[in-house]
Image 1 (tube, rainbow, N blue to C red):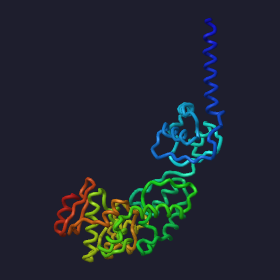
Image 2: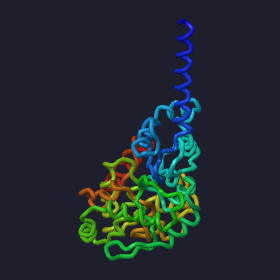
Image 3: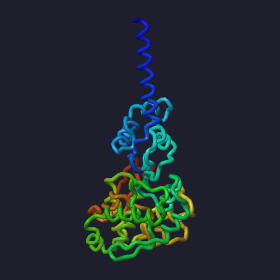
Image 4: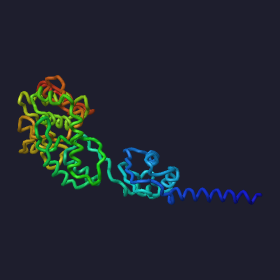
Length: 326
C-alpha cells in the first residue's frame, strides 16, 4: 500500500507536466484565424494575458504566465498592436510578443510643443520610417483651415499618443494627426479668430508661441493676451522661442548675436507674427490662444516655480526682472 502512494503521486506529476507541456507547445487550436490584438500602454503582464485570452489567442493563461516568469519575460512585452497567425502555440505567441516579431503597430507619444522635425525624429527613434523623409513630407504638406491654406504642417499635427503602424507612410501619419488637430480646435475657433482680427492659422501660430513660452496652464491665457496686446500696438513680440526655431540647433541660452539673426522668425527685429507656427500646440495652448485673458499686460518674465509674472509698464517689468532673475 505504501508503494502505491508514490506511484500515484508520480502519475499525477507526470500528467500535470504533460498537460503543462501540451498547453504551451502542443495545443494549436488557437487562434482560429489571424488575430490583431492591441496592448494598451502601461499594461501589466497579467493584463496582457487577459487580453490574449479574451481575444481568443491563447486558452488558459496560467501555463504561459509560469513560462514567462521562469524565462524572465514578464517585463519584456511592449505595448502596441500585434498580429498572430492562426494555430500558434502559446509558447510561439509569447516569443512573438517578447521579440516584437508579431508587432504591426507601436504606441508613439508626441509631446506638446514638438516641432514637425521632432515628430519625424521620434518616429524614426520608434522604428517607424526615416526622419528625413517625414520632415520633407511635413514641410511640403499643407492643410486648409477655415478657408486658409497653411504654408506647411507645422502647428497642425496634434501632439498626443498614437498607435502608429510600423510601415506607416508620411501621408498616413499626416492624416491621423491632422484629424486630431481639427478635433482639438475650439468649437468657436472661426468666430474667435475673426473677433481677434486674425485667421484661424494665425491664432494657431499664437498658440504655438504660448506652448513654447508657458510652463503652467494658468499662465497660458495671460501670455496669449500679452501677444495680442503687443500685436495691436505694433510692438515687437520679442519672444526668444521664435529665434530658437530659426536657429539650426536648439540653444539653452541665446547670445546677442542670436538676437540679431536675420530671419523672418526673429521677433526682436520684425513686428507681427512669425510666418508659421513654431511648434505643434496642445489643447490648453489652443484654448488660451482663442480665449486670451482680459488684461492690459505687455510684459512677462519667468519667476521660478513654473510661473511667470506680468506687467503693464516697462518700469513694472524691469522691477519684476530684477526681483525674479536676481
